[in-house]
Image 1 (cartoon, rainbow, N blue to C red):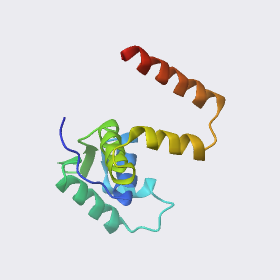
Image 2 (tube, rainbow, N blue to C red; image 1 turned 180 degrees about the vertical axis):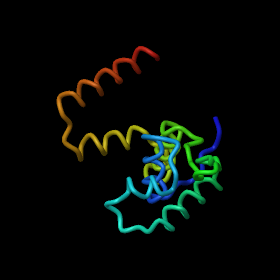
Image 3 (cartoon, one colour; image 1 turned 90 degrees about the vertical axis):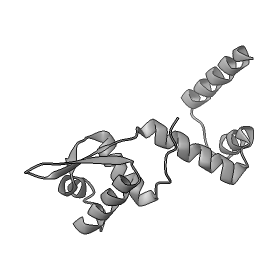
Image 4 (cartoon, rainbow, N blue to C red; image 1 turned 90 degrees about the horizontal axis):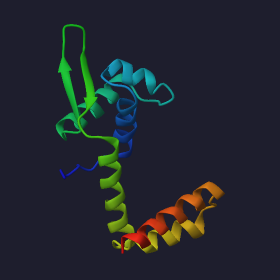
Length: 125
């Protein structure tokens, strides 16, 4: 498994647009981020950073330079989750799960899914 570089919150926002639809030009990403107070140059900066990190790839054509993700959302989520778990909970998965189960309201569907996962994990032993 390849190492996913650290991605800032703002870079996540830009990358999330590309995960939904790609390839896109910087102007198209900018349009999809209309609710932000960013300038087009800011979006271009984030795209350049993501490209330098190897998280997105670009293709230059006569019409425009377009970008697409080079790493899947799942890979990035896995890496960010593991980093968070290690930093905040010192790698203790049970502590993380207990914390969120106690501090957040869980729907019946959420509870059923957790119970299913726990049952599956018990079978794996």
